[in-house]
Length: 298
Length: 296
Image (cartoon, rainbow over all chains, first blue to last red; front, side):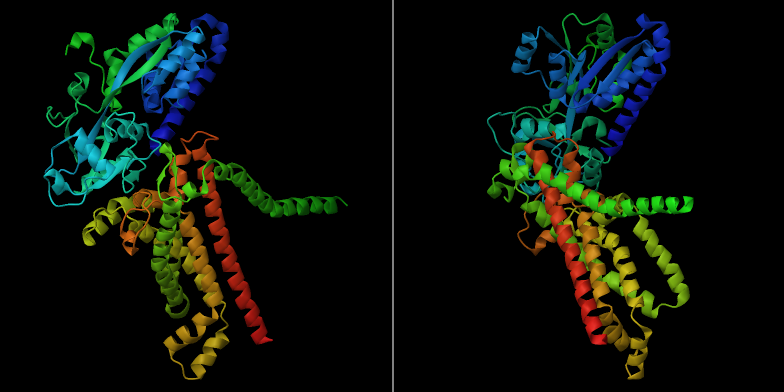
C-alpha cells in the first residue's frame, strides 16, 4: 500500500517534471500541445497514471495530468467542468447525472477495465468452492469453524483490507450484504484488518485457518482461489479474465471513465487508445481484468 | 563591541530554540484540541465509548482501541522489564569489560533498528512461529505485537537503567560487601533498590515508547477492534489507537466526524503519554527528595 502510494507520487512528480521542462518549447509552438485533466477513483489512479505515462510515447504532444481523490471527487469535478475525464470505480448516480445536466453537461460512460475480487484460502484447506451466501455468513461471524462448511475442524480466521480501501467497501456491499441496499450487516468485529494486499496473501499462504479476499492481480500461487457461485444452485466459477468478462464470476465490477458529449478530439483519441491491445496489456500488468475487444470474441 | 553584539545574537538564537519546544507542544495541543474536541459534539458520549469500531458505518466506539493499546503495552512491559533491567544489571554489575564493549553497541543497534524492519520479521517469522508453537487460530495477535514492542522498549529500558545503576555510589557496594553480603545480595539488596527511581523512569519511558509505537504493531496485531473479554485476549488479534490513526487518517475526509474522532483518539493518546511522563518524573522527584532528606 505504502509502496504503491509512493510510486503514485513519484510518477505524478515525474509527469509534473516533464510538463515543466516542456514549458519553454510550448511557448514557441503553443498549438502543438494539448492538455487532458484526469481525476477520480483511487482504485484506478495507478492504472490511469500508467496509461498517461505510456501515452507519452504514443503522442508526446498530449499531456495528461492524473489525480486521485475518489470516484465522487472525480465525478464532481466533471460536473463542474474542471476535468476532461473522471475515473470512477462505480456507476455514476442518478443525482449526479441530474446535477451535470443542470450545468449543461451530458456525461458519457466508458468501461475501461474490470476488477475481480478473488476469495482465497490456504492450499491445505480442502474447501474449494463456496456460495456468496456462505462467504457472507463467514464474514458476518455466523460461521466460525470450517467443519460447518464441510471442511476440517479448524477455527475460521477472517482477513480483510482496511476500511479505507475501496475493495473493502465493495466487498461489504456486494458480499457481506449480498448487494441488498437495505441490509445493514457489517463485518464481524474479530475480522483482521490488514493494511495491505500483500499482508493478506502472506497470512493466507501461511495459515490454514485463514480466508481472505484480494484483487485478482495480487493473487500468487501460494494461495488457493475459491470457485464462487451466486447462489448455491448455480455453477461455481473460478475468477479469470474469461469468467469475469462473460459475467459468470459474481464478485467483479466494471471500472469507468466518464467524459462529456462534445469532448475534444484529443480526449476521444486517448479513450480509443485505452481500449487498444497495448493499453489493455497494462491493465493485465497491474492486476486488473482487461476488456476483451469485440473482435477477440466471447 | 562587535563580539558582544555577536554573542547577544547567539544567546538569542539559543534561547529561542530552547523555548521553541514549549511553543511546539502548545501548538500541537491546540491543534489536537481544535480538531479533536468537535467529536464530543458530533458523537454521543455513550457511542464514543461504545464497544464497536467501524467508522465507515458510523460506529465510533473507541474502547476496543484503548484496550488494544493497553493490552499490547502491558504485554510488552511483561517482556521488556525483566529482560531490560536484567540486561542493565548484568552490564553494570557483572559483565567483564570486554563483554560490555560488545554488548552495548549491539543494544544500541537494536535501538536504531527501524520498527518496520522488526514488523517485517514479525510477519515472516514470529507470527507463524507463535501460531504453531502456541496452537493459536492466527499468529497475528496482541501477543506477537507485545513481543515486538518488548524488543523495541528493551534498549530504552537498558540504557536508562544502566545509567541509574552506574550513579549508585560505589561506597554503597563496598559497604554492603564489607558487612558480609555476597555479590548477589549486594546487587538485589543494595544497588538495585538504591537505583529504584532511575529504574522506574526507565520503565515509564519504555511504556511511552511502546504505547506510541505504530508500524510494527500495525503489521502484526491483526488490527481487529475486539473488546477483550478475558486474559485470553492477549492471544487474539487486537487493534491499537496508533494503528487506527495511521491506517485511517490518510483517506478520511477533512472535517468529517471520522476525522474528528481520529483526532480525539490522538488526544486520548496524548493524555496517556502525559500521565505516564508525569508519573515518571514525580516518582523520580519524590525519591530524590527522600534521598536528600536521608543524606542531610
